[in-house]
Length: 158
Image 1 (cartoon, rainbow, N blue to C red):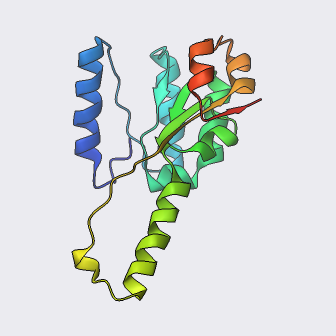
Image 2 (spheres, one colour):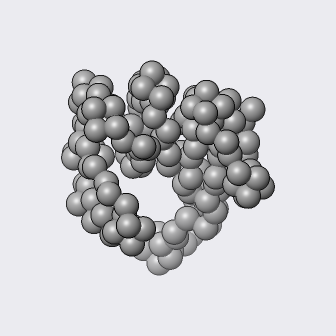
């Protein structure tokens, strides 16, 4: 997680609660620079972590390829929040559809241009989430993807 993210404390709390509910042990690593990402991945390897979740963050979005390369180098399965990571070679992504979000931006822009007051428009939450899986990466990691996951995926990259 990026400690410079304004939602950092919220993310920490949510991940901790999810881990406890699943009976899983978590290690929270902090990275706000590329060097800190390198150190975090080294720590993952040292701790023999079984997997990594990279939280949604603008900084991480900027260094997509760097994170995917680190994960591949250390053979660590990573779940990302945006499909761009999976397209770049990451194992899996699950997150809000950016295509749908941009569509909503267009609709809102049209409403404002027709005279709607922005303050009177409702706040929208994501309504569509995407599960994207990279089978080439799964194979490289020695992960057999269950059919139940394959059929649920919105996109499978081979």
